[in-house]
Amino acid sequence: MRKIINKNKLVFGIIFVFVCSIVIPSSNSTIINRSMTLEKNELYNRINYNDVWIVDDEGDGDFTSVQDAIDNAIEGDTICVYSGIYYENVEIEKGKNNLNIIGYNEEYPPTGSDDFCPIIHGDRTTNVISAEDSNNIKIDGFNITGSKLSGEIGGIYLRNCEHCVISNNKVWDNYYGIYFDYTDNTGIWLNNVALNEMSGIVLVNSHRNLISHNHAENNGWNGMITDGARLNIITFNSFSYNTHNGLKIWQDSFSTPACNSVRYNNIVDNGEPDENCKSFTIWHNNWWGNTESFHIITGIPPKFDLNPAKFPFYIPLGKCI
Figure 1 (cartoon, rainbow, N blue to C red):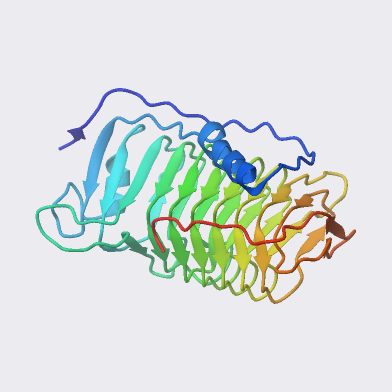
Figure 2 (cartoon, helix red, strand yellow):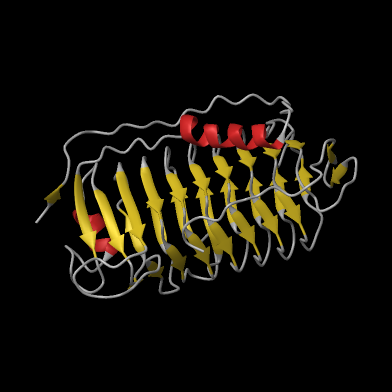
């Protein structure tokens, strides 16, 4: 039976107005405040809260399966998933919009004693969580692992989606971590994306997204790679200890400028120099692990961070670590 918590609608929106220009704040505190203001004031969750479904692996809620809850939910519903291990691959029905899928690192009463972020463990056949042609989806607070280890496959995979939020997740031991394909105006923040076989975060032909306060580290290829992605803001992330590039910005032609913004990130101790190929991306005030007066980003043509940070930035961890 549905548990109706509230009929009031809480409307949020994502607004991106991005200009490729260099603005140098006066202090690190100004930078941090500006970034947090961007998250709070320019990225909103547009989901309409309506009914709530409880998922608990010990049977104390409405469902024991995340997939069953999603299948029964309608637009505007919230799915609360409590601590436990869920062995399944979760697919949001094509075109289903306005869903909140929230993980809680506590047990749903009365039984059980789990106190960790719910684990969604895939069966290595496909993506662990996926959505296509869906808007206003929020995925928050999960431990996500077990994708297929080949192809354009990820722990979280979104295709042709808009106005979504991917936050506070640990995404590990997948082929790719978080994979966006033609997905725009979406936020990726406070995720720990590590130990994936290929790259941690991937944007393919995805535009006007905010990637902020993530740790993309110890991945088998790149911390993050973009391919044909434009007008994205990549700020206050840690791209470190990856086998190849910490961050690679790729564009197949000069005819369509990428014009991304890469600012205030920690990019250190990766296997290869970071790369900027055929892209007009702005690299500014990143921490490269040294106190050089400028930093060269390899590529065609090479780019320069002419004002690298003198000290590393503090990048907080999300709730699932």
